[in-house]
Image 1 (spheres, rainbow, N blue to C red):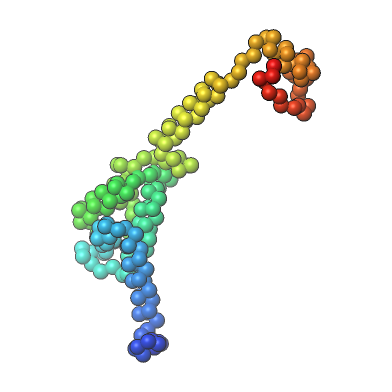
Image 2: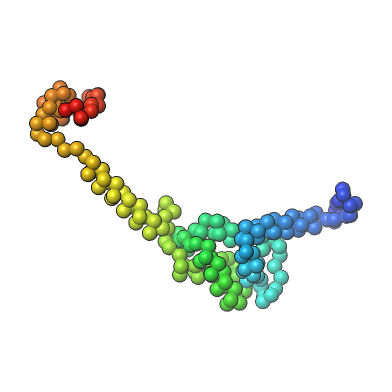
Length: 187
């Protein structure tokens, strides 16, 4: 095994020790993003041990925390090809539930996802929940109604004057022509 020498203290160490140290630094940084929930996240990663209170390699913990960080940041997860969205309160509650069950030997986050489904909302392809999509549709309807209320309606005499100003006897004559936009207030 090749030994490296620290330039600061002249101690010898192996490449494996250097990798392990880097992994621990990365793990510590990744856990930092969870703030006050760091202990809960650490406990949750323990459910991936092969036996109760069994050891977990730091690199495996780092992978689990990194995957969980994506869920923490976006709040979006996928189950059976369908996307769902949940808030951080729901994620914390789901992790607590998994930890309280004292199960172990997990290979992925599917059990957590099943628990999260109870509080999650379905997400569209655009990343919106059903409630957000409904709000967007209602906003569109309101804008359409406002636009309709803002439309000016010309009297038959006003329409005739408008056609005369455009130099046509019927509007179909305007198809394919470049027309100059005029102010309807002048009519």
